[in-house]
Length: 167
Image 1 (spheres, helix red, strand yellow):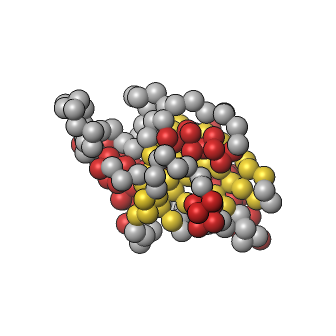
Image 2 (cartoon, one colour):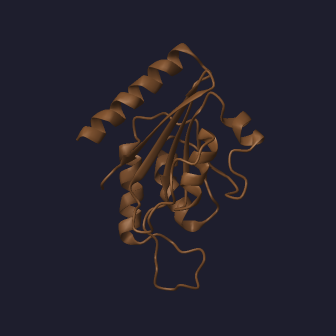
């Protein structure tokens, strides 16, 4: 409950700041939901039933956020995690290269926007760290699909928070 209240505070703060200054950029990062693990040679697995449920739950958690863009890596599990939220926002998924995080093109395209980014246990915290310019977050544990990182950038200053959303 405490995390939920904090999440709402950040959400309303970022919304009110956006109304005052169009140069506010807010990034929401999540890792893909639970993936099928029955074939270790499959490098592009789909979500499990629990993962599909979590993807729907993410869309519920994020339903009051008006995203301008939704990014995913081009893998089944991230696409399937991002799709319910993209549908709720009437947005097409954009794809990013996890080997080229927060490059100039991405910065320009997302400046002043509210953006959801769906990634992986290693790329998600790396992406967050790249935006922050410091090594603050470690890779996500393989069993953890509940992290929500939020970064708001205003006047060249970034504020970040990590919430654990239990589904």
